Amino acid sequence: MTDYRRLAKTWLTPSPNTMILQPTTFCPMDCGYCYLPNRHRKKDLSVDTVEAIVRGMADDWFTDKPVEIVWHGGEPLAVGVDKFEELLQPFEPLRAAGKVVQRVQTGAILINDAWCDLFRRYEIDVGVSIDGPEHTNHNRVDRGGRPVFSRIIRGIEKLKEHGLPFTTLAVVTIEGTTRAVETLDFFADLGCHWVGLNVEAKEAANVSGTTPEIDQAQRFWRDAFEWTAEHPDMTIREVDNMAKFLSYDTEIRKADGRHDLIPTISWNGDVVLLSPELLGVHDKRYNDFIVGNVVDTPLSTLLEDVTRVPYVREFLDGLDACKQSCQFWDYCQGAHAGNRYFEHQTFTATETSHCQVAFQAPALALAELLREDTP
Ligand code: SF4
Image (tube, rainbow, N blue to C red; front, side, top):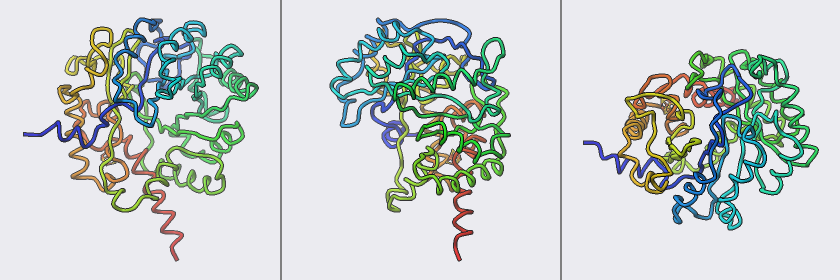
């Protein structure tokens, strides 16, 4: 019989490094590849629920590294600046003690002076979702189908005007795989120093998402590696991850990594684990992925023994199968739980088109470059 508690100890963090909170379900945008199923409805998180979340965080979660609180939506800024400030209050004693840091991931179209003032006062790290130059953002539209690119840029200009640093997250579509250099030049000119590149995947409401083939992704990552060599001031998340991995001793590279449980808490306090994309997805087999509600049960209790959760057990089985079968395991460590489910409707699956383009393709691209460099 599988000893899930042992597997959980090996592959899951004992407490969360990151928590994702949904201040509102609503988003004024309607991006073509958005995975959020309830983005047209407006349901807001209450201060009472945030207080319950904070009460439910256990003391032993706070080590030398602060827990990252990420406000994600919907569009988190759609909740309004005053309400958002109210939602921040219960975390203030923890932030003052250096136990949590605040972060928001936004489409940026609502950023104005009042938001910038709030970001500064609460030391909120800002991540902006933008895909590259204007023509690569055709998927980013408002509810009337109008492009929002100029409004995103206006929001970014506001951040710059206030001297606020920001990071960026971009979706790379099939067409985007041929435009790595153009895309990365754009981000360098935009004034950010960190970009995460999410190759488009089929997930949640983005049921028609088309993932590039592995050779298309390999070409993209090859171009990205070459670009990085010429632009040391810019950090590309995936290139950086690979560089860090290669810098470790063999023994560390061979060691098992741990997956963060990433508790993601909806506007009404429901909690899903392992993948924020599972929030709002209906599947009776998995009780809609909800492991409990923070209003009834402290979050620390909900996370006490996650091996009682069937989809967590399945994910542990999937990791075990990956470790036994995949040559990319040491670097990839099993990729992301959500993609297994969205592509195969089970967490026990191993290979996905997502892991091919996001983990295997960069490794293959780098190996190809190194081979060419070897005399
Ligand atoms: S590359 Fe895919 S199959 Fe291999 S370990 Fe990662 S998730 Fe598993």
